[in-house]
Amino acid sequence: MPKRKNLNGLPYNLAQQYFSSLFYWDCGYTADWIWCATNEKDINEVEIDILNRTVTPKELEIEPITHYLYRLQETIKKVLEGNGFPNDFVVTAKLEFAVCRQDKLHRSVRCVATLSDKEGRVYQSKPYVEKSFEELRVFGPAIMRK
Image (cartoon, rainbow, N blue to C red; front, top):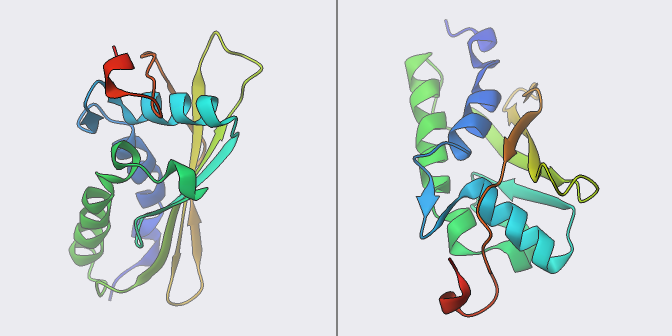
């Protein structure tokens, strides 16, 4: 019989994987794309629905932010299968980002991942913080990117 406690670390692993160096797009990592896009649009919070591959607000639903969500879906599937759960056991999987403009020097993106299962249990990660280093022009001509 599968044990739900084996799923407790999955949300943090998803947040960590999303910011990993494997998720590089064009000229920046996901933290760079999120920081620069939110900065250009003056947005402080972003939510990504992993299972539906959508972003709120919609104006940030751009390829560099959504492209690797299928890999997070694969991670969920592998963890579920490896622990004896059916593939549809997780019904929601979200990444919630907070971008604080007060400390522009640190350029930090804070992420909390939350999952819920068929039985109503919620799994939440501790906050994962990643720094952005690249300066990208997200919504302008590609020639503006460094």
